[in-house]
Image (tube, rainbow, N blue to C red; front, top):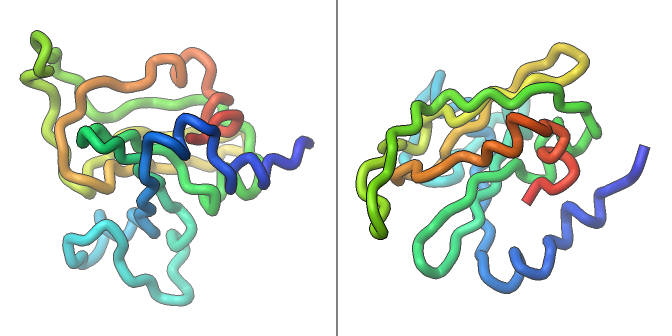
Length: 150
């Protein structure tokens, strides 16, 4: 296997130049437990979802891109992704200002990722906003999740 640890920690030039990265730690807790409404929530030491983190790349114009954090088990264990299933119902957007779309809360489930070993991972929005589009390329070629995580 190829060690992509350095690639995960040092984002590509475009991401580094135009986006600021924010991390949502253990967002699976947001569905089953109490939250304080912030991007990061405190975790217990024995929390099994502690490392299921997301990374939100935020552009200065307010657009956010949700990705997997380098600590996520899919990336840290180099798992093979066989399927990405987007759960959020995408409503059509209109015109130049992208009116419409699907409203998301921080704990809204965006996608389910299935790995070749049978493990399933849920990806949560981790920020409030309006879903304008999903990356359809991930449904056609799921391994892009691990090849280009940002």
